[in-house]
Image (cartoon, rainbow, N blue to C red):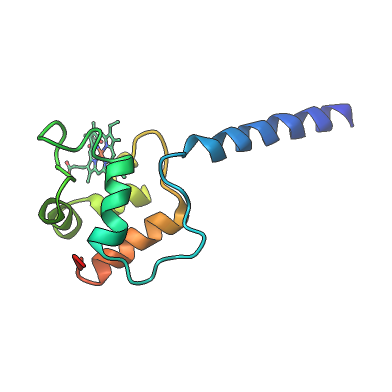
Length: 114
Ligand code: HEC
């Protein structure tokens, strides 16, 4: 019984750490079903992606509407954040579920800017 207790404590602190580690991108309490680049996508890119993906540092640049749209339509942006192709992005762990779903919807809707 004591071991179970300890296991639970360890589990709780791991989950707690995991929950806090994603402090740059808050999980959206409600899924945004009509995302636009300017309102919804750009803030995620600058919080979670542009530290590496800007100014040609790491292909693809994700610091403008045109670049993000191209990465979504022609590149691996959506499947990378879903962890469905190659290494997941961002490399330190998945974005919150609602954020990942929102990025997929944005592409499905034709990547609206505003
Ligand atoms: C810590 C740096 C870092 C961050 C933050 C980061 N990436 Fe990356 N990304 C990389 C590196 C390095 C590669 C190349 C290696 C690879 O393909 O896994 C890459 C590759 C990619 C690719 C594949 C490019 C190709 O060759 O087709 C995409 C798409 C991508 N990242 C999207 C994103 C998105 C979206 C985010 C934010 C949610 C993000 N990345 C955050 C470092 C980063």
